[in-house]
Image (cartoon, rainbow, N blue to C red; front, side, top):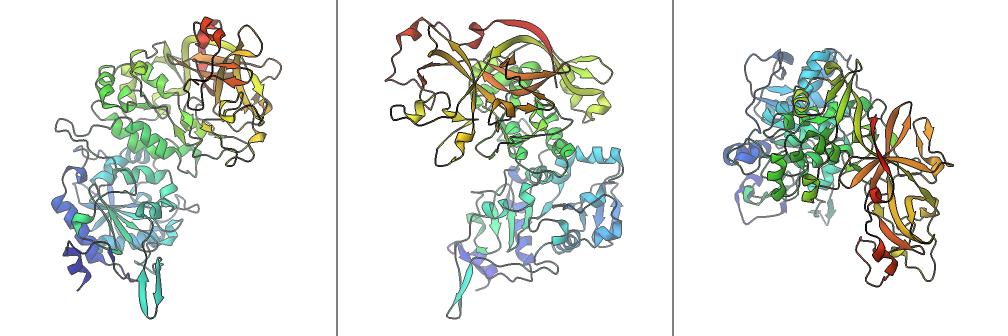
Length: 606
């Protein structure tokens, strides 16, 4: 029985086929593509019917090996790959054609029955800033309109090629020979296999993956296929009914079940995209927003739209995760200030980032109030409470222009950003001017935790947790090198009162002297920080230098009671039933604003 016949037998599930290390089964790949095109519906269709708006849209003709301009739509394949550190824009056309991954991709394109392929190094004029800007802003459409995307998920540069296509053979894993019989054992999940590739870690490939409708993925050992409905692997013999998309390699940008809109973003999808992208790597810091131009452009043209400024959304519909709040978010679509200020409450995802004493690295030229200004995986306390919407902060907020003027944050400003023009072209800077409540709060540096026979660790103060994640001693043996910073208000005695945790962005500090921010250092004698209100229950901690305030961290206004080094709530934030402190009954509020004096000031954020 042939592999093709086995593929049609529904009772033959999970068997393995022998893979030829030096030859690709193109017939099988063509069947995968044909099945998707012939039977799959909306999940594998284009997200938008809007045509490409590129004056000179070019494709590589794989038959003539020349780049041609398209005057009308032509069916094409797209290539997603890793350039490698040695790539540069001055490489000649003929040299690029001899590049292993491009040469192999041309061969695959022809074998799959196509003629044209889009390759960024060849089809974008790398020396033409206007052409680059135009095409980068439409990467969503370029990859989404491609009939197939060839993914080079093997190797660490374009010189590696596609294993099994050209000179490089496949490396077959997960097999052994016993008494003349070759045995195959169950491989790891496909998601994990490809997820460890260099391709999966690069910033530029994120949008290429999420917008591609059908991906033919070349790994070191075999070929995979993923579309909006199914996942196939070259080594597995399955009928199409059993090729469910249970564990996708990457989350595609997909339509919701709606007949009234071409696309409705799932609640919080914008934030999820930022979180997934922020953990990826870039060769050049200045690409941090450019590598997401396609994603940003896509959200900006939706209805309702989700525009962004320096990487943060200006609409509530980009933030909500509960469908019951989606209607309210749409009704508050023009609450640009409230949505933007809430988006500024991002945090480093410490569960994923193993920060050391040096903390996080900054990106020069980007604002500290945006995640794009830091080299860090980012997360949000997603909008789970309707109060964030109902009590969104509305304060005067402006952007400073390059000529010293001010542009107000409002719906007109948001729509102007949908044009895709650069901030420099629009004359905008990353300096914000906000008029809001400001507190000068004293903080103290707490000594590292030490175990005692009478005090449970989970209830201990002052160092119950580090940064944004719970600490386990066996997982963090160097914890004693860390310190903790809090705002403290004594009530009736020095051993009891309220405490507010400083949620430092650069959480790798081991002492207050390590809180280095650009050229400034927090003054150990003053031991004070400035907090500006940017939400109904939260503020941003800033440090000022030369008239510009820069983010140091966040502060939640609801404090916790403490007495003799113990917090009243447990490690999950719930009240400890065994704690009874009568003095707390006389405290009418745990809100920081009721315990420290504030003034309304205009602050310049950079």
